[in-house]
Image (cartoon, rainbow, N blue to C red; front, side):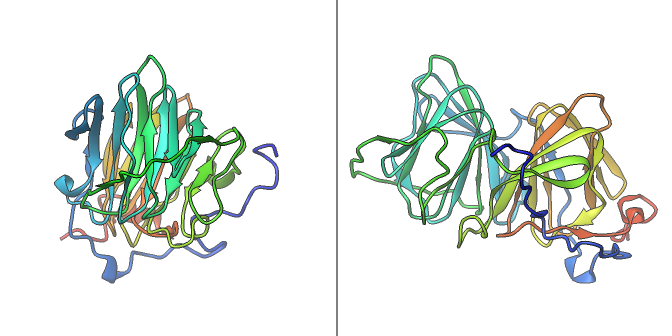
Length: 297
């Protein structure tokens, strides 16, 4: 199937034709500010030699039920088989990468994603002679893992495989279904509770052409937005930020915001919600201005 064929309905949960709210519900009044973190400026950890995690959204910047970051795998390195009590999303951004889930081995191309539900033994590794870069996301503020001693025989999966029924879910960017989310903007769903029943988070990829943007909106959960291509402009209640080169924004629950592409080149992001299904509550554009900020003192 070609990417442009049979597009699925917008997966962000926004009711079609509904007028924007004049302001966000008072029950969503935020208790934390947005945080913008440049790649390389996150909290570093290296639990496995040769693999460094640059945590860009997490407990260190007050994220709730969400941790995201960039994992750099040096040539020939990999993590051992392990499990989590939560799900995990792994997206290859640069280089070569493979993910094994209980022996099922997926060879990834850039922008392919593997989502592993809680409790499944899995590992990732870089089989090449150059570094690889992954985007990782988990629906928790407490990172834990349990090493698995059991041996799994490697079973290479077909290059077009989209996962294993009732287990991991694989999105192949070359054949993924696209849908429009705004002006000059298309999106691909990587994971949510509709695609993976029982999943605690949702997320995907969005591509903004010149002039592309989303309407002013809020969420009832925290969001992480990592800019993986081009340059993005982020507006939060009148505050303006420029993001590029894997810089990541944490948008706490209730903050009025939107992203747009003011540049002449395409801009792309990976977004992750700390909720099982995507949802945008559209509000009046004035709420994203200094004068109309619904939360100002």
